[in-house]
Length: 165
Image (tube, rainbow, N blue to C red; front, side, top):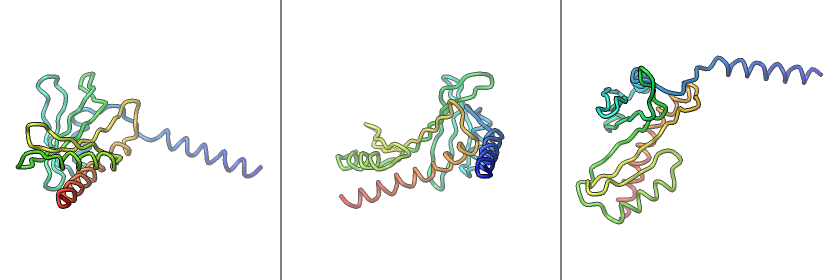
């Protein structure tokens, strides 16, 4: 009987803790800027001229990146999805080896997707954070913090792949 009471009390405590977590299902430009700043990513905010959605540029160490806010509504605009991306100039034509490295990255990574920008001699990596349906603010912060890991993993995979050619 004591075990049942203890288990019930623990479940109530967990439910109460979950109820106090701040949940968000979309972010405004100000909230995005604050979250990126808290992660140490040096954001600079602009607005997409075609739809008014927030766009951030930032720095992860020496790497420049962008964040496009998508699926926005309301006033002020609040957006359900955030697409982080960073592009890198190859300084040469794209090769078959580059495609192999990109595919290897995509097959081996849970977070982030790599790509080639045809005709621009660039490669890149993106990472999407979905907020629709609601996530805890801590979850958002953790996922924003993961972006630097995604960039690092991409650069490491690309350098290792080029060294192996």
